[in-house]
Every structure is written in structure tokens, then in C-alpha cells.
Length: 283
Image (cartoon, rainbow, N blue to C red; front, side, top):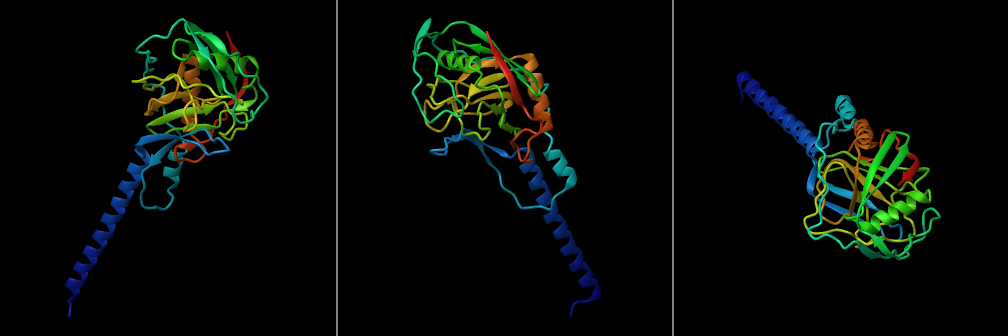
């Protein structure tokens, strides 16, 4: 029969083991919160609906009771204002001065709009564009030498007022994918202009803060009206057309939106600070 001393020692060992397990679970949750994104970042599409989305694989972990302080931290986003702006990529071989562009018809447009004129398109020079939004101005420089067909489409959509009255529907805040996605009049991530744009990518393409790029489905040459603006980190495969850069004022706007966080507290949702596009100009 165990003595009182032995029982006390057994109870102490049991308590120590319980405390160790709790500490291990807390450490796991901390790791999952701070470095949840793994290396694989994909684009997925739902057929018929044509959902345009950048998705990431997440680490798992044991469920823990909700901690109000931790939840408040999750509901705020990263401060990316001190990060350096990445230089725009450069094509290994420059395009000719003019290229031919085609914009095949796709599913019905989410908002009435005409496709751009097909045929010869300049592949030199830059174009200034600007979005007036409820969160602040976002100034952009479109680069024809990187993506002439995409720039031509983007200009056309702005000139026709396609983006006016739309909302940026998705903010991602986790390391590996820090972007604001816009350009769908439905606000659901499934809408497009009724035509597609060819991919304008090349080997060695990388992404970083300050770049403007096209969203797409998993299929090649499936870009349309949706685009994303990188305000922080973006570890992506070279499948997304980069067609311009974000100016200083635009990055300040995006940084403020990012700091306010997104709706789910899990790194991927609608921005807590709404970004409604009130108007857009080009030229």
C-alpha cells in the first residue's frame, strides 16, 4: 500500500505532466498563429462559378479555449509600413515595340462592359492610373513592357467605369501572402468582364511589396478583371501576370487597411476597413 508521501509525490508528478502538456499546446498554438502559412500557395477555381482566389495551406494544431487577448491580436493585421518596396521584375528578353492581343469571350460579364480592341498593342512605356477609394487613394503605374495586353485591358475597364462602385473583397495578412484583391463587381470573388486575358509571365518571375498583379483561376490564360495589390510578402509561383506598381500614397493606404486586419481573424477574409472603389482614372 502506498504511503502518504508516495501519494503526494505521485500527485506532484501528475500535476507537472499536466502543466507540461498545457505549455506544449500553448507553444503549438503560438507557432500556428505566427507562422501558419506553408510553402505551397495555389490558385483554385470552382467551375461554372469561376471563383478567383489565392489560397494557402495552413498548419494544424490542437484546439484551445478562446483567449480574448489572443483573439484581439488576431483581429488586427500586420504593420508592413517599414518593409522595402521590391523592384519590378524585368523580362529576360524584351518584347517588340508592338504585340497582338486577343481577348476571348468567357462566361457572362458580372457588369456590362466591352472588351478591348484586339490586334496591335504598344509594348513600351508606362501609364498612370489612380483609384479613389473609401480607404484612401491608391496610385498605380502600369507597365506596358511587362504586360501590354493586361495593361490595355485594365485601361479599358477603367475608362468604361467597370471598377466604379465595386469593393475589394479579399485581404490576406499571413506571412507568405499579404495582398488586397479587388476587381469583382459581385464582391464574391467569382465575377469577371466576360472575356479573358492571356498570361504574360516569364521564367524567374517573383513577387514583392509594391507590385500590381492579375488574379486568375487554375486554368492558364484565365485572367479577367480581378487583380491583387501586394503590400507585404507574397511567395507565389510565377503564374500571375505582374503589370505595374503601387505608388507611395497607395502603399500608405494599403498598409492602413492591412493593420486593421480582416474579418475572420485567421489571415484571409474581407478587410475590416472597407475598400470601396468610388472612381478610377487613367492616363
